[in-house]
Length: 298
Image (cartoon, rainbow, N blue to C red):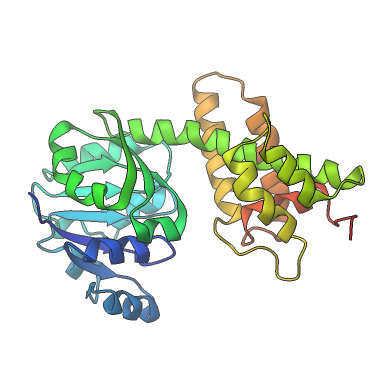
């Protein structure tokens, strides 16, 4: 299957650029409850559907970006679920980070309809999604991967198969999010300390980025952490409450494995505090304001 018809359900911050990217080469039908998002998708060459059911009928693949496993189950099997409208032999591509909890049951229920789940959580953000520059890890059977490959390769610059089971992708993404969550919190803490010690945070960030303390998250979130103190804060590229969710997934997975993750637990508390302080919809770099509510070197 080299030119599949793809249904994209949800045309939000990630769904719209992914649908737009896919529509450059494939037939893409999209649905969103927001008319404005549907209009933007149409401008990008996506075929407008008036319902999720209409979007998926006759599609060989359905791409989903949902918040959690409960929402995934509802989209597929709920009162207005799409499973009855999916063709046997089609695939559902899960791009979200939802964790492994409950995923095996969803896979089994889809299998009753001869539908495969491709577990393909991604990283990269909206700009990279639109450019086909995402990082995607995949857990799926070889047959399901073969069906999904023409779609995933258009979205990803780095596409890694981590296992033959749905859930393997979620497991690796859980490990990834542990590191990302801790790194963001550590970068915020370091920059807050630099400010408290009277150092210029911008020069500190430049110096740290050239040495052994450098990391992707320090380089990416560091400047935005300093912008968090500006009026309006940093541009929201990844909401803080996403890491409340993701670090919760990390904690739950670690408990199930009887593994202590003290650094992840500490970082999770910072994101929870940030959410409680009204920063949930802010960029995740705003976690620095939990550590240091005001910047001193002004």
